[in-house]
Image 1 (cartoon, one colour):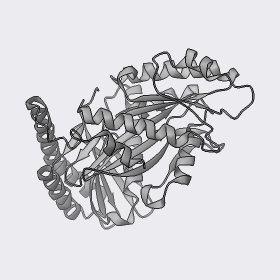
Image 2: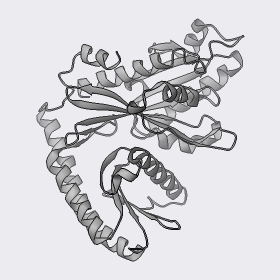
Image 3: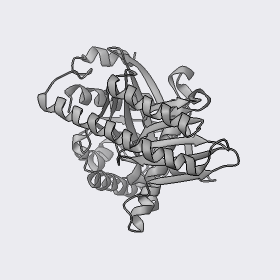
Image 4: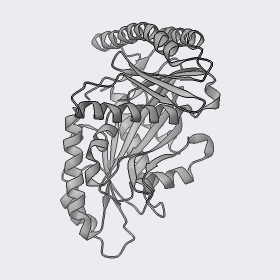
Length: 195
Length: 163
């Protein structure tokens, strides 16, 4: 649910990065944070455990520029990926405008990917959303690692609804901005339709 | 979409600012913020420049969401007031009209009792404004009136954002 403020001429949207534990959601945000000009970003907040596992969420506010005199701002959130943090994940999906599902391309993580994607659908449904109607894209992360599944195999397992998909390596930043741009664009197009 | 987009117009924005501006004085507070439950900052008065308002809004909403989750676990609808006591500064956080969050930051020049009392009165006024705002949005939607700033944007406008 975006927030349009005519008084300050701003449009704010919320993007959530979802995916199994250790798939690279936080790394995506960290790369975006590092590579964004200081005047276009706010502080990145990570509510994490001592071992740097996400406990509640990461948050990064970005300002993209103006469209027709309105400042467009995107608030990027990640969810905690570990299975037992499900209650927290549900909270973060509230008011979401667009979703990036970050998949771990390693063969041994395919079950975790599938489980997380099902969990995403269920949690969205609880909030009254339908994943197929939301701006939604998939990122196949960790493409640099040996022993990863091919994109065709991943697509077959995870992208059954044929949404836009991107290959990435979040540690080096490859594909990270492409993913962000793609989902931001889908959200703006969705807004344009006026829902 | 399960929730309609929250739209804020100039008129209501001024009304909101009047109410929280008055509350700031009457409660002897340092800063007051109004935050959407999804973490978007709606407005702020007082010494706002001293704070990272965007982060504050996001964390407040996270806080309210988490305590809301706790409330449901024990069979409560929500905890409508949260109070955080610090060494110098304190935070009084309350839910207004079930939809927005009112954050009052105050120090020992004020007191919890005073803040609670004043917040109660202002909350009612704010509720009324937000109800009016929701109705206004709904009516505009029904009429199909398109003052929506994004209705006329082109693909090119969107692409330009990323160039």
